[in-house]
Length: 478
Image (tube, rainbow, N blue to C red):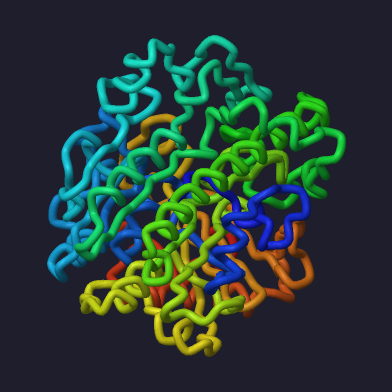
């Protein structure tokens, strides 16, 4: 599970610039989902949903975990949450996690992943942990610390940096730990979560990989200069927004160059895992998944980072390879929701799927090579006030909820105007149709889909959605 890898930053998705040969081969030998969506475009809530099969309003993790937020409601995955790790542990698997955890105290094994646990501390707080111990043993300064030497920034956001020692690269270290687990686990059934923090900023690839990407050959996003007319006004002033004219296109291409170089590094490290499994004769009987917690704007609509409901932020790559049971060459058109992966993997592993899981399993479809029926997918995220400014009240935790159904996407915004996009006619999401009288019926139907999902699963902090319809409030404006 990568962090902040956008859906189209892999070769198999049609990106003709980025080099990801190992990931592409995995996609070719299994099933990959054209339209996979996280349940929240924010790290901790998204990760919790991938692992529990439930939405944030059910598992209760609305904001990013950090040690400084310990004890704040909505910032830690509760001890009683049921994850795929705990369920597979009960089913006879040894379960482990290396790299990123980012759901609770990184130093304490949790939720069934206690057979193998080696996670680095939340990276910006520079707390003691195995990765920082590794850097100390190398005698290398932490390249991921805020304002580390050699770090520079794109506008106000997106720190970039260079390595002085390739052994200090965090994805390399994470895969080293994963290879150690594989070497120690040759017989027992194993479920290993390899939490790759990259390409989340700071973006620090091995320097030699930058040579693969010439900035002048990187195509700029067509909607980079989106003026955000007709969009929620807060988007013009939120974190990650790069005001028009404040940076040059050359600066944006520098960010893209570093990002793609880091993606290529991730690909090479995934290749090391594949090679180890192949040498041990285990690859054919291994279910190998590559996905990301959420995406990255990377200049689209004039933004970097995430926490928005645009495709680049909420849509992710996802593939499942299992040569023994999943026919090769499948390209799955039906959307995969951020709550669908856990039940799918549980069924593939022969483990029961609890009734509390809110996603659907697509295991039968991909093992038989049949097309699953399309279904609406949902995502939700807290407000920028909660994520970036520390406003931890419940109303700010339940600020935006999205549904995609067919070619339409609707974003129900609690505090300002809503968004409605016809993705078939407007894939760049430039034209917000929420205020159009011609689309009033469509908007109302998309709202009903959200309310039906909340009624089915329990609304939690999103009970405001159902209440607003009950009171007969105006459709536009939330």
